[in-house]
Length: 89
Image 1 (cartoon, rainbow, N blue to C red):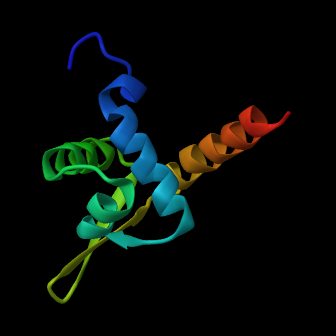
Image 2: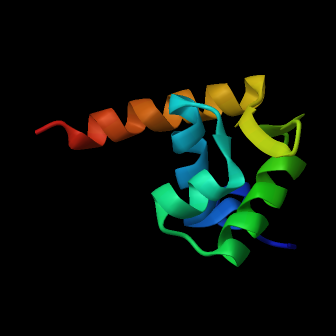
């Protein structure tokens, strides 16, 4: 989308997915269940994250598993560090 930053385009759901995948690989349904997001929001976020090279989809039989790319790991690591700093008292 013209004029939007990548963070704006990824949105809150996308950022949550990045942090979720920082902990472990996941299926599409894990995002919906554990993040409390709807199908459309998760689907849109996954497409954007894939387009920016932050996540990778791997097929395992009929399962679609998602994990962070190397670029995604770097971004999620920085986000995780920022969360820790903001949580400090």
